[in-house]
Image: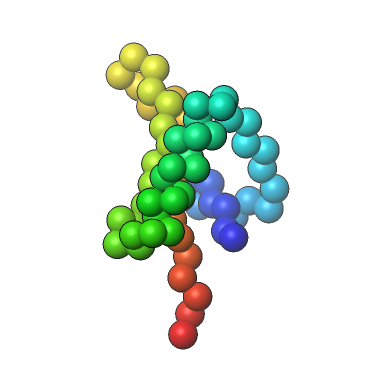
Length: 66
């Protein structure tokens, strides 16, 4: 697992993620799709307020090196 802050490109070692039940279900569905169809590449869980992106979580499936 690798957690990266996009703004600083820093690797983060520990984070806390608090989701509503709907957000958790949405993330679970995205992860299921990524696992079953790796060609999708990335899944985004985003919170948009008005026309502004407030928060975003990007998830990719990391395949082991051969």
